[in-house]
Image (cartoon, one colour):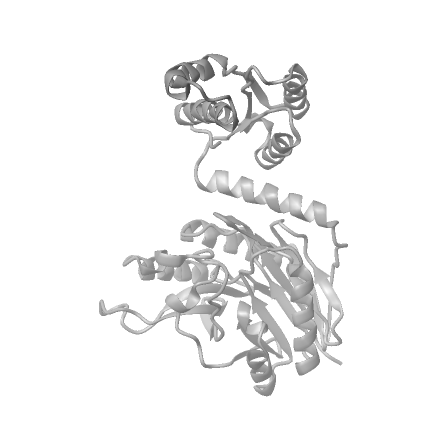
Length: 396
């Protein structure tokens, strides 16, 4: 009878460059997986020590030491459970001062020892990815034994092509573990599941896929950590855009976990927008957000996103009416601010608009009012919103 293994996938929100904070998240996830879920192995996302995408942070002279310090802390603080995590691996040359060879790597550690290492073989260089500029591709297949089960370990893009998975199977793997930093776009869940089904059909091996979650500048990671059985059926589906550690049981070619029902596409998009705004504002140190509220649907949706992302106490709605603004629009903006519970201010722009119009009057003489005057209104609003931003620190 096949042995039953209890595993965990740590879907973490990792901050680029915050190695110390990321290490603490990994330690906390491993502790939770061990003590609450009863797992014997926990897997964290790709480059979980430094966050994704690290880009030119990788080139900083102090980074090899910072990464090594993070690894040493994990070796010291994570006990009683096997931990898989991602990191930039600085190979030969780093100690001697020469340019090091850099790999997108994963380590497997247990009770103070590194028991296996993997290096990403397929390096993406399209869309938001620029990995070939920094990393050298790995060439070795990594299969390690965990409680009698041969686990094939690969990183993100390695599961999208047939080669690494087939090589792991040929090396004796009974189960594939794939760690990721895979960005969100519409339809990505379906694309991933199609790829997993194809790899399962080729290898006959169950797959566990763990992804990170969170917004990083103009990229957002949706989590969507997934496990697929040896027959291709989805055995675990983690929530989108939520941090968490999710239990998974492996028995032979069978995986068992919680499969959450997919949300409607409108809900998924809204969750992604909320997560993106929250992480952008927090990671850049803004105390809150300013929203110019016209009473129309665009600013209404933005204000709702901001309130859900940051909490009403961190959102400031500002109406900036002109001579062309209907009183109904002012009423709608005020009513929404009250419904959301956010701060609300009314700053008429008539005097500012008049000042600009007076300054331009002689130059514009003989020309009828047109889009120019309409755009002057938006410029007035922009000046005032940016003044509030500069004075109080909120992002517009």
